[in-house]
Image (cartoon, rainbow, N blue to C red; front, side, top):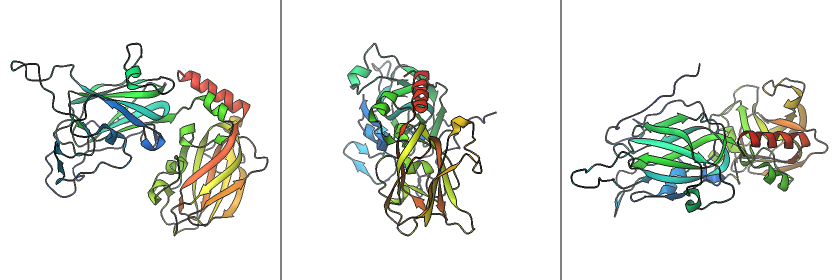
Length: 381
């Protein structure tokens, strides 16, 4: 049985100095290992909000943790690292409080459309000015609709998180049971207040027609549905970083392990967008100058044969790239000759270190294209 998710309600204590995160309320959530579909680096954007008087809506999707400077004030008041609206008021002196249905809202375009497994509404540093409750809805609209088009009467919104009380200065987590493909979210805060960050964890579900048109693409990229399923070590940074978009700009934007003091090695296992044939690969050690791996090898497995990707000793694992010397802070490119179709790959690094990006350029097989199309239809695409 899955353990219940911790719930937080009520105010946090006023900031009293020192580490502002010392009394931050958080707990283990079962979905945060999945990619953040709304990540700004994937193309996520807060495209509209009805109010952002105290703090801009764009802060919601900033990838870094919210910051707090107790001395920072502007001409509108305390500068906060989040989205904060003005205080709502009632209609008259006799009814000074907001009406029951009064709320503020923000429209979010997911950077990678997909199936949402869980949402985090983070109210870090909003101790007494967070919303009383939040709710989240989602829709799927093709193309690049404007805010006006998304708010039209004919757009159907699906409730992912019902109106729920939350707490201040806390990571408020919500599991999502609706397994459909969505492109946009509508975040509501009741009746007003501030939210530091929004994280939308799930599985990317790209449009098969787009990938088919591309022909050759990165089969393991996050935005194409690639997943970092498991890894030997996550000490400094998560393995999913290694299949993120663009080039790594800093060490913490890749995957880096602790220093090994034994004779073993580190590894990551990935699931591709679907069964495909890899023709070229890149191993990028960018920004890892004194901590790049000494060598790397790549193996592939086709799970459609019934082989278990979780078994590293399975004979179905085929060597795609033999153990090869790597250089620090370098993009290494390799051409593969007649590689077999695979659904999973595993990169082994020796003995430890950091990999900024792994790129697997290739194309879907006919079986992979059929599977991807069927999944797209199953998710409502």
